[in-house]
Length: 323
Ligand code: ADP
Ligand code: MG
Image (cartoon, rainbow, N blue to C red; front, side, top):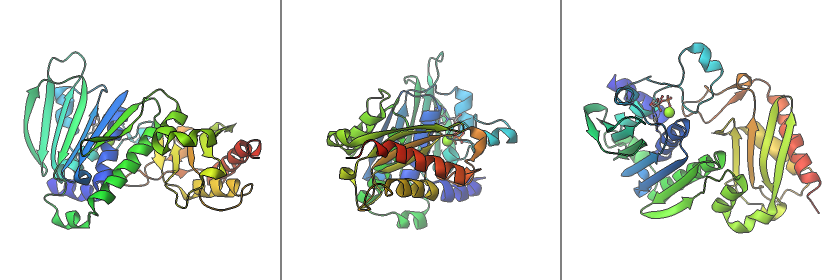
């Protein structure tokens, strides 16, 4: 059991940013309105994710750290229409297998919070403590018992950068959630949760980008494309200002990048990469999200169709906004 968790951890938890992603996604799934992430030393010594979501009962808290305990799907049929970010029930046991892990949670109606802990995969006795409604997870000394993986970690700056990147993208996917990110005691990202995507973009990339954002809004064949694309003034040499979201999930997808590039650079000289935040909303049964251990990729049942729609969405957005 513990070995299986350690093996799963190798796939799910490749670096501190993957831990942050799994924990924040759980907070989002729990209906949180506000999510706080704090890290120290690039997440290697300390990660805390605190939310104001629905929390768990004592019994559910005990279950949550067991392998394949998910409250999110009940049977195989549910796998074809996944609306939550999590569904495999392996994140918490995997993280707890390779760290000192503590989860404190309280649901409405309970007087006390339940606190469950794993130390290198060993379950510690459950405790009852005082805490607000919601869930807080602390992960310390990541990979302390897997020296080989620990050696693969990059510098503190690089690991912090990965964490900052994923929190930014999760904030862009959820403008209605207030995110606070604290790195080494300093607040580095603070969004309001007011629901306005352009405000999250301005928070992340600076308020000076606001006048150069072009709204994207396109609907065809039950597929909605929404978001913002930057004017050529905001072209960047890298792709760090590009976020693709499919049904609220941050994804990597070559086809989406290609549709953006081909649409954008059919009207603008190619001289860098545009800022983009594109949200693709598609019926649940037209995508498969169960194709990657960290759920970073999705498979569309009709790639060509999505390509054409995204391409047209970009063209239409730019067409009347360029000089
Ligand atoms: P999954 O997200 O795939 O279901 P996880 O291992 O990430 O699996 O979490 C296990 C279960 O623990 C979830 O299904 C959920 O019921 C519960 N859980 C985890 N994190 C939270 C949270 N922040 N708030 C409420 N419930 C949570
Ligand atoms: Mg999860």
